[in-house]
Image (tube, rainbow, N blue to C red; front, side, top):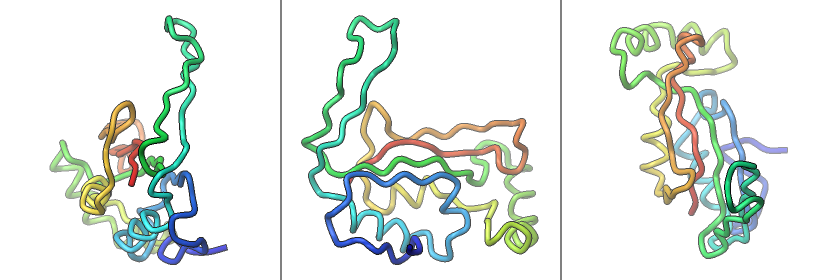
Length: 147
């Protein structure tokens, strides 16, 4: 058991880290991202299986073995496209943080992931999407990045 800012794993020991709706509520997201980079293997045997039955290459493995460990994520973030929503998120963050176990509505997690030095690759990469039906937590960033 550990916390994101102090993962209980040795350096270069993990093939993949999966986190959803996590970095909004950690005390130090930059430290958490640094820890994720620290524990991910610098060269990992991680691939993804394509299960699209409409694809001519059914069940073809996509091999990423020449790249490092993977960080798969989905996080809600501050709106990048709606200034009014972004302002609401900023104003309501103190209340949300109190009521929502430290959750911050106004974090720029996509920027933090880029600044942390992860390689963003395709397929996967990082994508910003706004799910309007989810209101204040509708803006999200998701993707797959590597070390």
